[in-house]
Length: 540
Image (cartoon, rainbow, N blue to C red):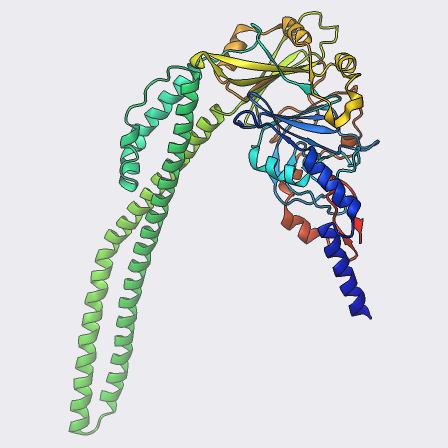
């Protein structure tokens, strides 16, 4: 009987998975697939940002030339609302399980806060239903996961807004100073390491002999990418050289010890045999026995002489072998230093070509800069009429223009009064509403009120590149901003249940892995994890 029940449960599970026993769920998934939109009129570029509309329950993905993907979502339910604000992707895991809600499955997870809010595949009932995450259709989430990179901007807004191109004197323009200096500094390092690298990987250094100065920022970015790749190759070559030198040193040391030990054992055995031969000679009583014992003793003495000679030779060679082993160890240390230097140069080149985030807070009257998820510097800032709200605006570098001498920017304003006014007629359309084309006036007006010292402008202009952003807000940075994050800015005028219900843990990301949860949780055979963005299990 139990076997029949078990087979029935397995059969029902299979039917559920196929959608045969759940026609409503299957129909829902078909509708989700039908509502996924893809731009087909042009080639698709790398995603720069995702905009989640809470009112429309939809996510739209943008590249430098406009939207490329759209899909319905399910955000946080009342009490667990997905907080409106500005985030970025800080971790990606194809197979992830919630640490807060019954070990729930979160496929194609793209984390935006370390306290547990993420984009991922999940069930979409047609209304906000998660515990703070943004659930997406499964196939859409899988496709998006393969397109995005760590650092992609994620904007959660009350209504569906669309970036508008903008030009303003306050927006940074590219400058070559730091990139040019970095190229020359890295080229100088090549001269020092070229001979050793050439010995390990012939041809590598020759290709690096002359490093021309970049003509513009776009060319500088390409050269920095080349430097990062070259330095990574140098680091790998140096690591191989260091390993080979360490093995050589260890082999030489072991050989010397083995030869010395062998010679010492041979002498010890011969001396033991001599003692035995002398005992036999002392006990001999007949001429024949005495002669035989004397011959045996003579042979043993010859072996002792040979063993002593071999031991002397081994000891004479020991300093040479020790010196050779020490030289090999020194080569290993030098190669290890080369590896470290090359890795540092590669990291520096990679960091320099990483997008920059600049945040100006009216609350603190300061400007902050982060790059590669690490703080770079901060500075006081002047905001005219600082006692009046300025709103929240994000400006994004789309691409180089004018041959790399300038940048193309877009702007998004998240001022609620404007969003409410422009969004009234669109809320009825829900998922089918077109994103709002907002007036660029508020974004321009915010820039008009900003005064940045020229030295700060110069420092930022030297590291600005496509994908970089400027955020201006009445808010300060959220406590979610920290180790291994970009700026996280939350709109305090919007519900924040999805983040208030979570404990901020800056070290949590070191524990978010599948093995950790497999060791921590015991899965119950009576339930199956759901596609919950922080949701509960689904009983069989």
